[in-house]
Image (cartoon, rainbow, N blue to C red; front, side):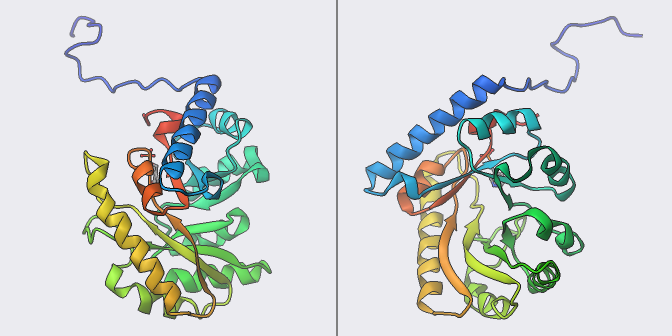
Length: 249
Ligand SMILES: *Cc1c(COP(=O)(O)O)cnc(C)c1O
């Protein structure tokens, strides 16, 4: 048996201590300041930008701290985790589904999510629509676009987006409200700017196509690392996790 060692050479999982509620509130305030500056820089109204707190693996206590500090929207990636948190948080915030959604989980999502940001296939559009209508509601969706054409990422290829949207718009239980993307990661957020710009062009092209049941109200792009650039380019919905809640363990 090996002697105890304290830190150092042992392959120990890096422990990430959760932030305190006060720290979360302070970080959220800082994020809002940065959003304000970015919007103001380009002559946009900061209040037109919706902040979605990306809360995967964040516990209820800290989510509540952010809500108390003014957060109004949260985004969850996993259905099971979200259902558990919904028990504790309820409708104090609007729920956005931002992860990859399996078709057989659509029935749970329509129960309490306001928006599904990750619509990327017709079979899912059909199922969401059917399940929403069964509950007597419609559900807002954003189309996830694989703007960097990355093999590892979900999303509709940009060149297929208009045809995809025309096909998905036929389902009456969903309302297509905009586009979402997760662009390629770049160390320098400036290098992500061309992808954000492409998203804006695409949203404009979709709007011009005047498809019934489709409006380009929301452009969801920008995360902790690059949200200022996204806002400068025209994002009106940013999904921010670690900048508010700290690094994920
Ligand atoms: C985790 C996540 C985010 C937020 O990522 P951060 O880098 O922590 O801000 C945004 N969007 C999606 C889809 C995510 O899964």
